[in-house]
Image (cartoon, rainbow, N blue to C red; front, side, top):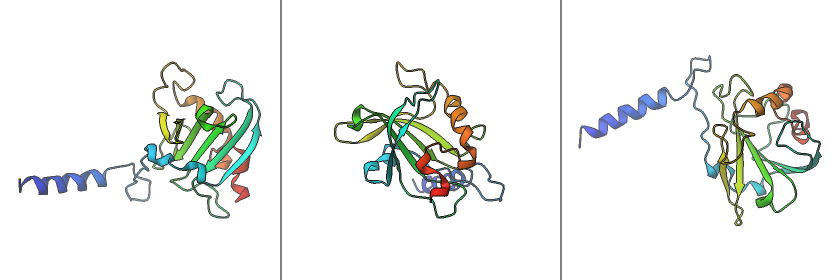
Length: 176
């Protein structure tokens, strides 16, 4: 048992030193982890309502939208900080019947061929207002094909590269 503890400590050090890609600065990069708890209580976050137009070939149908952000970027920012969580409800309340999408800025050049540093999600909201991850940018939810690969998200959000890949008008970096 005594030999196991030092071995576990060495393993933990090795894992933490190699847990991400090198960001070019010589320092190891640690990617932000995402869990159901990442989205807990999002209805209490700063939020904005607006009407959205239809986006051809997208699950983001036209209509009422509400976006939530866990924290606003510092004034004058040219990008959203790593750890930013944005949740978008499309439709009318209650949220459990809406289409709920999210994006999390996880960092470490994640999604480097698309919306750099951003990871995509679809959330399911239960009757108690708890969010759980239905889709995380990998496999589509059962019976759905729109999110078969994250290229569809990247194609659209790629047109907003100058706003750090965030499309929602209320979340223009120039607004903060």
